[in-house]
Image (cartoon, rainbow, N blue to C red; front, side, top):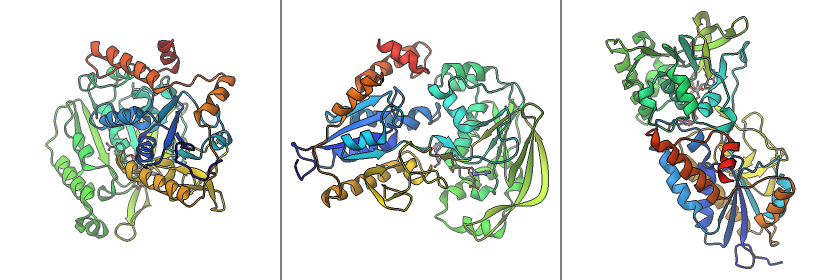
Length: 461
Ligand code: NAP
């Protein structure tokens, strides 16, 4: 027993759950804390990097460069990786609490918000998460089927994920074949019959959530023309007020781009991406699968900056064979931890996890999307993780954390072995990584991802 954590005799043992941006930024902050720390990062897949590997679109390689930073962090001698281990199934929260001074959950938002309308789950209606996971080669979504044989696809929502989905549906094989898109997805997309892609916003053009760089890309595609109705860009006075605020830079830029799209002369490109506003799906119809969408026409109500969509009573119909609901991610509960069902996050105060009554649970922390909800870009998670680590260090300083010596992974490995779980270290990942890169080379791709856990384990044998 020693009363100080973070010394050679009693190093700070921290478990980080999740290997996406938030997990790595928390690791970085801990390694820079000046304390003697030993970090074990748990990841349920054999491959690390969370949404950077499985969420960022394959045609956005610049965003994936964050992986280089994370790989450098992982090379630190006080960092240890346990891939292929699912917390809550292979190892329980109490097992972690017994072996670590601090457990930090950075497990992101793995599920989706629901539309909650009739027909939500008809075949042909999918979440954006499934499609994104599928084209990115996420093992969970590897075997999903998307019927690309109809001419019209609809994407509900106007965030950057919706734009990613539209762009992947709109691009030609030539535009995708030198990216790290999963082979199975490229093969299926090559046969796609989709000609019209409709991206639906429930509010107006000034309230769209996508950012202008992503929006602009929709006007630069080889075989797809963006279509915006000029009359859809007529703004009410509250929206004009929103745009008059110079801080609203994204919306101002978005409007410029949308106006330029609306003024385009048209083209003979093979596909059209219709960017539509003030429409909400109210019913998904079809006998045994999706055939038609009923859309309510909306108007905006409320103060500038707080306008909400209200149905006008008018509806329109849209025939379509494929639908993606891209209306935001949502965290999933972990066995043994409290959960805020309304917000889809772990209840917390400044990254300190609390129980249902708001009482802090000592030694339990969270960062990233499971802490604040699914918002911001990759870099946003850095400040967020630093803030949580700051809270953790303050708790250690204030004596709020059990100071007994902890065993960390040394206590965890035997439990995993007893349960027949094969934990993979970072060197194992580097081997998988090298094989993926080698495999991609022949096809002129940065990598050809392994899309099944069994394939990755077999490679290591
Ligand atoms: P998001 O930005 O929150 O957008 C969600 C969209 O869904 C909004 O247009 C929202 O409209 C709409 N929506 C929500 N509930 C709805 C409902 N019931 N009916 C109709 N529409 C509904 O979420 P996201 O696109 O999933 O992105 C998550 C985060 O990742 C964002 O911060 C995003 O910027 C980031 N991201 C970044 C990139 C990139 O940098 N390239 C790529 C992908 C994702 P309201 O505004 O009316 O709520």
